[in-house]
Length: 412
Image 1 (cartoon, rainbow, N blue to C red):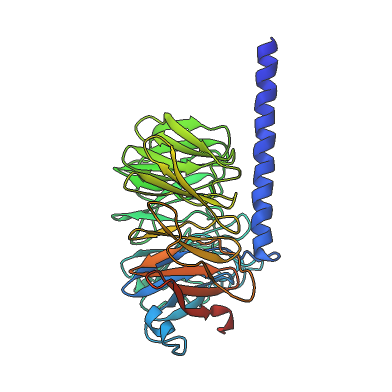
Image 2: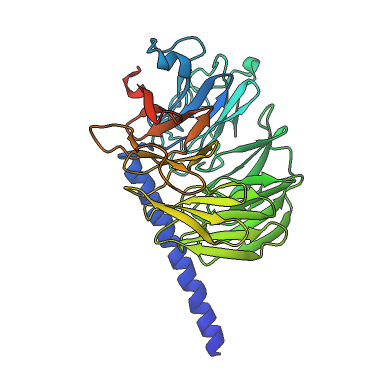
């Protein structure tokens, strides 16, 4: 009887803690939005020399780094900006017949390029959609996709699949994404039709992280303390595990392991075949950014102001580096240099084998601290930073210098 009562209260406590965590996370998103409009912190997708990203003022932009480095007028050739209408407002996704209902859509998810399309997930309160935009010449008019250009929105009309925070992932002809309604979708990339699985997989908990996919398996977590391995082919459950806390970061898969951070301040290494926890590593705060794994080393940014390098096989700490602020942005590797951005707006370039600085840190703005939460993106020696002041910065890792900036808040 005592065990039954204890178990009952344990379940109740977990449910209360899960609810509190959801409220905290909603509050963090609201703080980052500056009011009812959702600001977002999208990273970049690159293709054919163009960068695509969701802005912090509800727009999708295509920018040409070459044109930006020359300071040419925006938009130059190949560049464009497309406002994302309010979900439920006149002309929003469903055309002029819609009526105002919810705040401006935000874009937290990093877009993904699919042939001539760039696919973007939106967030507006509890509502969200996937929008496929013709990246060569957007055809959307008043929020309505132009089918003749291959564009689509899922779901169509005024329907929603729930707010999208985690980034979609594309494998072959299928796009995979999780939503705040707790469901994982596998959509055909041509028309955005949910025809790959018989139905979405319901995790029964909010999903605010991105999936990771390897060898026909989809790995994804929810805020109900669960982590899942699903068949990429039909969406069936392969295994699931329950964690002491919800996963904070999106997962990264390397070799026989999947790595992710959780709200218990631990970084996890889990066996991809059965979900067994191989090791954990404790920080002094959440591991929120997605781990980066290369050559048997896991690089994990933490909100305790540190970046850790760990052995992927054992979890042994190889080195750590302390930044000037929390690390929420996912780092990026450029050859043997690990580039890390802090929430104070400082960009560090560290030797991957030792954590020693390769160059002096670079502030994205020398006059004021500018938080960076969006994941970093690299092409060649250049690393691109999307900062919360609605500016994009380009840093040359070889020279260790900032080479240009572009503030889209100045664009009509």
